[in-house]
Length: 360
Image 1: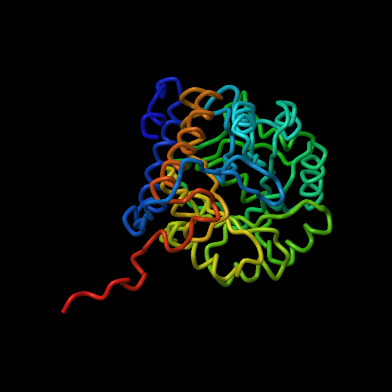
Image 2: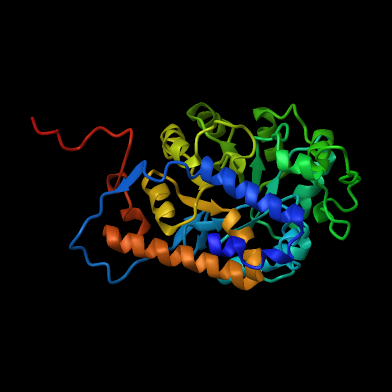
């Protein structure tokens, strides 16, 4: 992953490079700060000559429990941006989630060919804009809405402030064309933060999840839940699933790594809706840990952006294959032939009681 991150970086703009280095560092400090908290308990002498990675997410069959998270403005990383990511996801037979802040529209992404795609959504002050975005996603054949709920305000992103971040003049947020949402103007700090403050509805609450269900029949995943209390509310308000996410460790400092919050959310959901992990996945072993702790699958973000910048569609294909191969190997070495065989007994965490009493 680090090689993908650094490869071909000289062709990026300084702002983009600063952004990638910053988010990578925050990810390691927060989402990846506890590499040793979870250890494996592999089983042996099990026939692992055949291993099945396939799974079902919201009724859709995919090749593996590794999906693509929404990441904004991908054409800043590569000229083909979301087009390349969509083709790579389809080739890997997995799900791509398109950011509402994408530099390619839902219609443009759909034009790349068949594939299972979700649409990430923020709720804006103008609810007509929300309705129009959902309608466009439906017409483009997207299969679910991923509602981001942890961003009533944008976190303090100091690199964006230092760089006075705005989109390059040749790029736009394509999903907002003809929706009269204004543009991201240059300011004395972060143009993105100013744009979000002016457009995103800070009064968003659980009742708006119910409202969203009145304007679409698509299943709604709630992204940004990291506590049991909110997990129970997500179930109560009819969410089709939960994405445990801390927004790439860029919203609120000192929140737990998502892998640390996962089991609390899984237990609160009590199997009534699926729970997914977003954030900190860099190896196939991370995927195994997440599934052992109760996740139904994982979403990856930064690895996609790094690989997209390094080699476009081929880079994204490679990173998906790398993670798949590592995950399959981890399953084999742990004695698991299918996803249902991955259980809590395959891992031990820092908060587990000792399984063997110490010698006196």
